[in-house]
Image: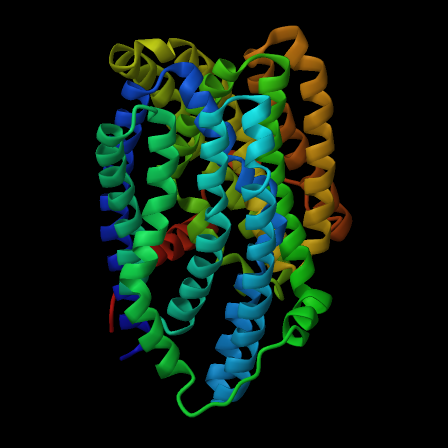
Length: 451
């Protein structure tokens, strides 16, 4: 099978599963928002933020480096080295997952004593995400190295459908709706793991056929020392930043405010997802790193189209989403008002997203991590000032300012690396042959033709 056919099938399966995922996800959210009170939804969001807060135990981002290294060894035909890399990662990942699970599971009685028994039970249930998350990561490493795009697409769709099905079932079985929501989230992962286990075992046999491997920590330690550590630190910092914001809102405002902010932020993320240009540009930008002028021009043009796309989406979303959703979920009217404010964050987010892709292409993950740390500190300080003053509106303003700060920091560093980089208003208003080339490449990525 040719590479073009493989990529084409991968895109087709991913697109098909995306439809199922979005449809099931929308129904799931509809049921959640209609069933849970604003306070209960805030509690669920806080409990589900525990795994991201402790995601350092999952070595987030390292699997991307592992997949790349295993792909290189597969091309060389060195199955023994592939298996060694995978087995080492498996050992470390499962060990850390067990430690994280134990910390959260055995802390549940203290949570129950401080809050109530229901929240303690929710913490116990969510602790199993650390174990299922480790297995899920290992599955996806195998499927991606094995180029099993169909299985990956089915996996994601199955999880979302199972989450919706379990939610509807558990709401009938338990008198505690928040516990049903957390149980559906966790249970869907475990059932999907069991369903995909035969496929994972088969792919593992195919990849490592005839190869001997040993488990240990050395391969993972090498990845961390070499180039993986900055991916781990950067990914974790992003997760930590997003989760700690919810706890600051709870501390300074209320649990209900957490729900109001979470709904508005989720709607913002769904709006941004409607314009996937940045995901398409990620594999294109690295191809031109060696050609400085074209690379900088590409970054310049990418910012231009991201801004245009997000500005148009933001305007449409501000007009249509709040009144329509307000009729369906009147209890979240404050969320939809907050959403209109948060839409301003799309603009600096568009710029920061392109800069993030550029820094990955330049292999400057260390700089990216530094920017994320600065951004997290800036965000927390802003929250400490704005949340007591303006409540949940302060959280929306903080989000906008934090994204602006991040975009500016990335621009400042890129200017230091490439002093000639200086986008102008004329660049954004003009349309030239480079624009045509970029649009052609984006179209090819979105709609690849099998040859």
